[in-house]
Every structure is written in C-alpha cells, then in structure tokens.
Image 1 (tube, rainbow, N blue to C red):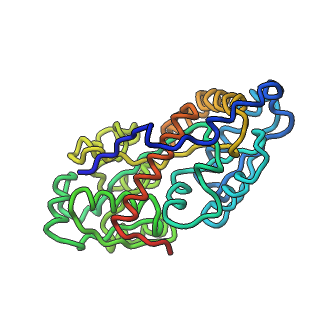
Image 2 (cartoon, helix red, strand yellow):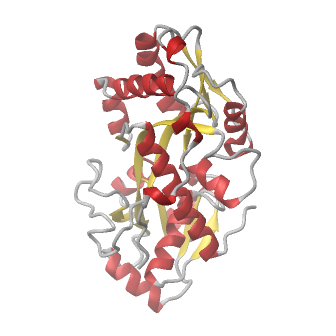
Length: 324
C-alpha cells in the first residue's frame, strides 16, 4: 500500500508566506467591491458555494462581494485571470481539486503554487463507491475479490478523462491490485442511464450526485471515501473501515488570491471566510448537499494543495493517464 505522508519541510514555501507588508493600508481593506471568480458556469457546485459565501462576506467586509463566473478551458480562464490580477485582495478565486489536477496532468499558463496565495479551504465533499445491484458484492472486500477474479470486466463510469472520479478509481485499482475498464462521459449525469442498465457497473461520484440512485436501489453503495462516515449515508462504512488503508478522497473547494497579496489582507479574508462558513444557514445548506464545512488557515490550505498535487500527479504517472 502507498501511504501519503506530508512532510512540511519538503515543500517549497509559497510566495504568499513572505507577503508580510502592507499593514498600513490593510486596515482599510477593502476599498471597493471584491470579485469572487468562479471557474464554472452558474448552477454548479462551486457557484453554489460562492453564492452562499458572498452575502455574509459582503456584510462583514462592508463592501459587495460579487460572484463573477468565468467558465472555460477547464477552469484555466478564471485561474489565469486571478493570477494576473492586482495583489490587493480585491480579486479572489474559488476553485477545487479539479484545478490542481489539471495543473498536474497538462501544461497550463500559470503556476498554482507560484501565482496564487491560498486563503482557506472552505469545504469538502466525499465520494461514494457504488456498484450496479446486479453484481454480487455487498462490501469492498468482496468487490476487490471479484475484480481480481474478473480483470477488466468491471466498467466504471466517470465524468471524463483525468477527472477526480477517474483518478480515485485508478488509485483504488493501483492500491488493491485490480484492473478496471474506464468509460468516460461528458458529465456524471450522462452516465446514469448506462449505470442503471448495468452497461457500466461502478462509479465513484459525490454522495449528493448518487443519493437518488442509492435511495431508489438503482446503485448499491459499498463505501464512502471520507475520513469518517457521512451523515447522508450513516450506515455506509468508509474505505478505510473497509480495509483500504489511507484511502481518503474528497472533492474539496478553496479560495485563493493573487500571489503577493499582503499577509494582513490574507488573514482578514481568511477570518471572514471562516465566519461566513459558520453561519447556520450556510452550514445547513452545505450539509444538506453532502458537503462538509472545513475552514482552514492559509498555511494548512497551502500544505493541503501541495499534498494533493503530489498525490494525483503520482496516480496520473502510475496509471499512464493522458489528457484528451
């Protein structure tokens, strides 16, 4: 088994850690509306979180926090726009592990760790390993045994090549010595007909996305990928409980500013973000969607980003995954 240990001393320090100046004017921050760039179209998970956070942050900052959707190029447009914005805290980016994966799998016109200043991880949503009820297994141990006895006979659905769904499935295969067959779709919703018919027999998708199929018995849940059980599926064990040590995967979301943003501004933004996340209505909405509120300091988020990049870059290399 591969264990992902985080050694802080092995990571280059982010440029933002040295952005300690600006204290004199940081007390007056913000002086104008704050743009919160979203790398997806309205209605997606990131957009929902951004629009939940904007009102309480507007109230606490005293200036409007304006959600600005910049979809396109798998999120690269929003990331690049943020990277080139003035480092004064008035331009922020909400992004997910998908943007970190993209930077690991292909060349992008920015450096996630040189050009961005992490502010806080805000939320994380676990995946759930589900299989078609026509398959005989009732738990992860039986799933692994079946897959070993039937190499490449299990077709798994994902929302595309080099997505977290594919990487999580390939990581499971690498760690347990099984062989699966990848069937990519243009979105997890488009995979549902084939999952229900049994044409594809497995997927790792968010708990929220799979909830209706699980309730209707269209798919059987075997394990969730969070560190602890989720309230949406309290009777479903974690992958670690199921005998796969260290297997924790979440679709996490965080907020960053342009590199060079003064440290006092980063600290103010982080404080207001955590305050917004702890608003009862925000927490309740995220929990109802199967998403856990996180809220870390900027250093913790920087370390987490580095660790996630290293982990998924390793899976990409070992599994031989190439971008489309």
